[in-house]
Length: 320
Image (cartoon, rainbow, N blue to C red; front, side):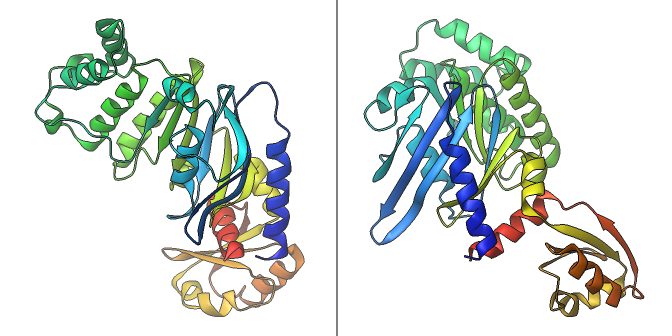
C-alpha cells in the first residue's frame, strides 16, 4: 500500500475511535479469518443514530462479513464493538431482535401473495400484533394496493420493496442492507432510495453496502473497504477533499486514443474513460497542469472537481 492510502487508513481508524453515546454502531479492531485468509482486518467504524451510512468496496472486500459481525450473525476472531448498545459478541441475541437485515437475495414464495409472504414471516417469528404490523409495513412502503398480488409476478424493484417491508415487520431500530439494489433497474433503485430516506427521517438508522456511485452520494457518510481494510470514511464531500485529487476532462476521439500515453505522463495518477472523454486526475496540481498542457492541442480540456468514483478508483489502486 502506498503512503497516501496508508495515511487515510490511519485517519479513518482515528475517526472511528472517536465514538460517542449517539453511536448506533461502534467497533474497534474487528478481524475475521477463514483459514489463512484474513477477510476483515482490524475494522474500526462507527455509525451515528438516524444516519444513512454507505459501505463501499469491491467484491470480496469483506463488506458482507463485516455486516454479519455487526448484527451478531458472525463472531469476530478479535476486536470489540457494540451495536445498539449491545456487545456484538456476548449480546448478539439482543442485537438480532432489534436489527433488520436484508440480503441481496431475499427469499419470497412466488405462489404466495405479498400479504401472505409477510404473514408467513410474522408467524415464523411469532410476532405479536401480526395484522397491525403487516398493515403498517404495507402502508409504509406503498404496497397496500398490490398486497393481493402473487410475489412471483412482481418485478425486481417491487420484490425489493416487499423484502424491505419484511425487514421492517419487527420495527427495527437499525437496518443493515447488503447490496439491496443489485440487479434492479435505475428507476426502481431511485424509488427504493426514496423509501430509505423516508425511513431515516422516521429515526431508523441505515447501513447499506452498494457498488453504485449515485447511491453513495445519497448517503450521509461513507466508508470504503478493500481487502478487509478500511481505507477512508467521512461525508462524500470530505472524502473528495481528503483525497487531494485534482481533475481535468478531455473530450474528443483523439483524446481517448492517447489515453495510455497520457496515463504514463508524470503528474497523472488516474485516467478514466467515459465514452469520447477522459477524466485525468492527480494529487500534484502543478504537475497535472503541466501534463495536461502537453496534450492541450488535442481535443477540448477543462478542469473539473474530482468525483467520488475518481476517489474510490484511486483508493483501490493504492490498496493493491
